[in-house]
Length: 215
Ligand SMILES: N[C@@H](CCC(=O)N[C@@H](CS)C(=O)NCC(=O)O)C(=O)O
View: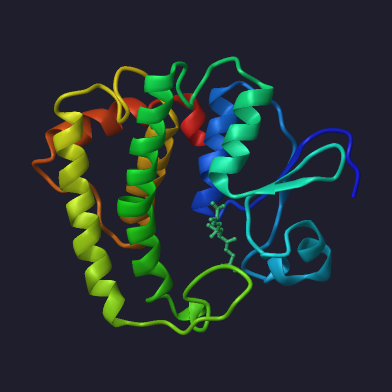
């Protein structure tokens, strides 16, 4: 498929797609969006599989037809093509710190919330992991997910007691993943930031006021 510009295939129901929409908005880019109807299983249609055979969103399709999937890969492409308003760090040290904290936010926070949601929601029976293969739910994982999310809140509260943003002094992709995780936990697991996590709450109030987070 050939298009005139990068196009982002995404869904408003997808927190991974939101990570990319916020990144695009923070950089001030205008990238056309194409909605993929996950509720109606459009991700498994032959037309979408031709774009992303893994049947997942988000996917960025370039002008020459190349598909870039996986949130960090899409971010890297956009950061290198459009360096203005950097979100992945600007020096060897800050790039490494953003990568480190973003990965922790994804593995300890985002993935923990996802585990609880995908192993509990009725409509995701037989789809406990997104992607091309079918997996049954394991209900026992839901309780562990909630423990992991509680620990993520505590660990990031401790981190944000000593720095203004997750990776240090500047807003970055690590804040985007952390913000999307906090909203995802509150919405899908009914686990808002616990009372007493003042540093995490202070950070959340500041970061969620950024216009890009409405993307
Ligand atoms: N590792 C992928 C994960 C993408 C993913 O899991 N996307 C979900 C939406 S948040 C999806 O496409 N789900 C389709 C499904 O459940 O069938 C990434 O970084 O983009």
